[in-house]
Length: 406
Image 1 (cartoon, rainbow, N blue to C red):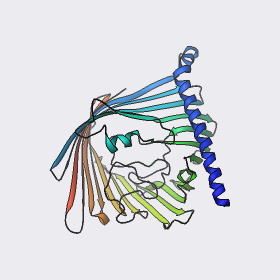
Image 2: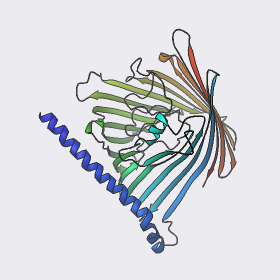
Image 3: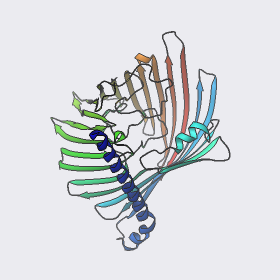
Image 4: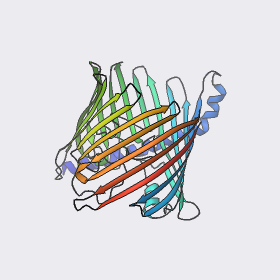
C-alpha cells in the first residue's frame, strides 16, 4: 500500500509539472508575439534582437517493393527557426517544422493521419489535417520551444529541446531523452524532448549535466545525470538515471588512436520493479579515419542486448526506437564512406548488415551545392530482409531533394 501511495503522489506531481510546463510554453509564445516589437524599439542598433532562418525543401520520392508495388509521394518542407535575445545571457528559441505531404499514399486518413496528430511530446505542440481529400495532409509542429539562461558556468534550458548525449553515428544508447532513426531522410534536425536541463561547466575540460523529462505517469518519465571529463585526449562521459521505470547506467567516449577516431557508447538497463525482463546491455563501438585522398570512412558495430527475436512483425525504418532497445536486430555492422568529388559535389555510401534477421541496408547519395544558398541531393535507400527459407522482401526508395536556405 505504501508503494501504491508513493506512485499516486508521483503521478499528482507529474500533473502539476505538466500544467507548469503549459504555462511556460504560453509565456514563451507571449514574449515572441507580444514583446518582440518592444525589444526592437529599445535594442541597440548593433544588437540583433530577433533572428530568423530556415529553409524551403522540395522532396519527391519513389518507393517500390520487390520491383512490383510503386508509390510516388512528395513532401514540401518549410523550416522556420526563431531566436529572441532578451539579453546577453537570456534568449528564447522557437523552431517550427511545417510540411505538406501528398501523393499516392493515403496521408489524410487512417493510421498515418493519427500518427501525425499524436502528441509528439508531453505537451501537444503540433497539428495535422487533410487537404482536399485523403491523399494530402498538412502537418505543423514546434519541435523546439525553450527558454535559455546563461550565468557564468551555469546554463539552464526549460522547454522542448534536443538533449544530445549520443556520440556514435548510427546507434546511441547514451541518448536517453530523444532517440532518432538513422534511416529517416526527412528529419535532419531530429526530435526534441519536453525537459528541464541544467549544465555546470567546472572547467573547459569537464562539466556536469542534469536533465528531467516528465510524463503523465512517473513510469514513463526520464531523468538522468551526466558527468563529462577529458583524460589523455579522450572525452569521456558517465551517465546514470531513471529511464521508463528502469535504472540506467552508461558511459561513452571519443578520442583518437594512431590518427584514427575511436568512439563508443555502453548502456545498461535494469527494471526497478519485477516485470520479467532481464537486465540488458547495449554496446556501440565505432572507428573513423580520413585518408589523404579525402575519403572519410566510419565503421560501427552494435550489440543490442534489448532485442528479442520475433519482436517486430513489421519493420518501420523511420520510427525512433528506445535507448534500451536501439535497433530492430541484435547485431548490426555499418560502414559509411564519403568522398568530395569536387568542392561542390560530395558522395556518400552507407551499408549496414543485420545478420541475425538476415537483412541489409544500402544507401548511396550525392549532394550538390548549386548556389551559396541552394543545395540538391539524390539518395537511394535499399532495405532487404529475408528468412532461412530463402524468401526475402526488398524495399527501395529513390529520393530527390532541392533546398533553399535563408
